[in-house]
Length: 144
Image (cartoon, rainbow, N blue to C red; front, side, top):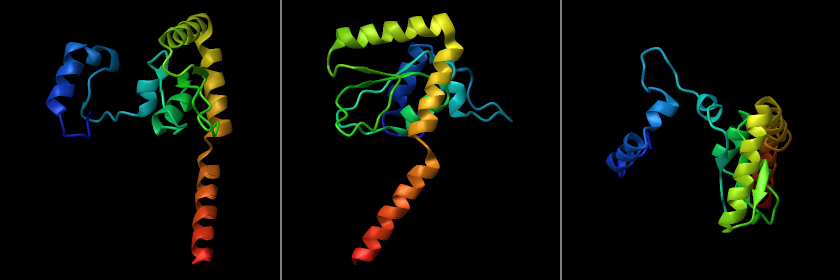
């Protein structure tokens, strides 16, 4: 929303109408820098559906910040590693997963956050991702 100029007024109106600023806090204060963990740690969970197992950076950052994520079970490559999977396009199952996570957060937020952080450290290690990219690039260069 903040970096996209297309339909910015529309999205700003949505943010204002839903009073997200009350949830997220004021933006653009002098001397204050916004960090993703401030947003993710304020949320109880993140729903990140995707059809092909494309892991979003948002999901990775949320998990690393202790915010549990729900993804659809359509990941054939098993790359998403969310806190919970929901059946794709099944709103009842998605609602059930949201309720389960929310109850867990209410019972023991620290435990849930620690599990999320552990999953992120295990599966979304940036050093490992960088090594994989370097290997792919070396293979491409060697093949030419």
